[in-house]
Length: 330
Image (cartoon, rainbow, N blue to C red; front, side):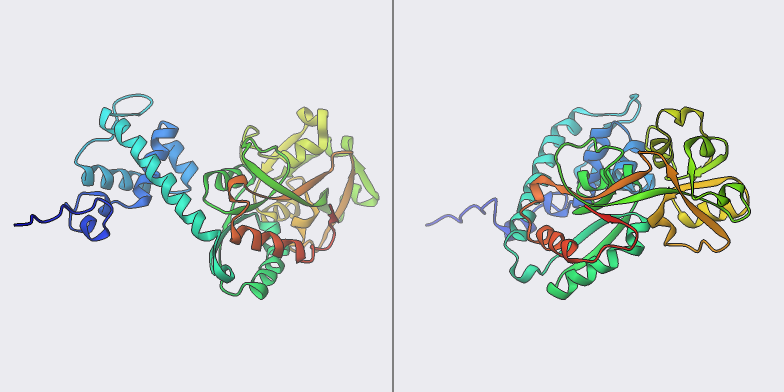
């Protein structure tokens, strides 16, 4: 009499019939949160990397621990660390996520007519003045592609593209990327300018000097600490004299910067393109006499994704899209 064959470990039917706590019941979001906490050494740091709330990350870890029936982290340790079970599971979770990513990239590289989903990182001035033209070019040639947009600052956009949250990201070349596995295409150069009220004495000049800027309270962008790139355009424009700058406010939003200038809190220092996203009625814009009063904008993507069909499609669309007014093509 023949005996029943043992189920193949790779048989999808066999997998679905197993203990509900086994692999098929686990969610990739749980694994992603687990690996982020393990890599970053804490829930707070993981939330920044994942762009999720701490409660969501904690819920993912709790669900994963419940499914596995073990504690994955020693929460009494400072910094938090994995338990023996957690460290054992970490290698398997990483291997599983890498293998799944390889599968996704293999499928994307053979997409017929590029029917796919692309996730783009951007920031307000690019999103409102340039990205729509790129998306029109993309949709015209590849109507099957769906697009998801994430906005952030220079620092967070680097994390998004390096961590795989987005496929490509628009970002200034400076501050320099710390991630070395990225490719980029420089697109344009734009001026860093000052914006002031029309009755400001500096408005009578064709341009302003670095010393003129240093003599005033300054409102800059983006927000954040200096270490994270906060106020980078102001500091880069002023060069070695930046230590003397009186930066009173930093904001990510051009509308907020303009409102603070109108309210006489200081003069604004911002890229010219950003001013196209808000009304400057009653204000005056002037160039700055500084060799560093400009920035270059580029499009970044991971080197390992360079051959992906959807990345190639977006790069092609970006190359065909008309640039916004007021920038210098590179």
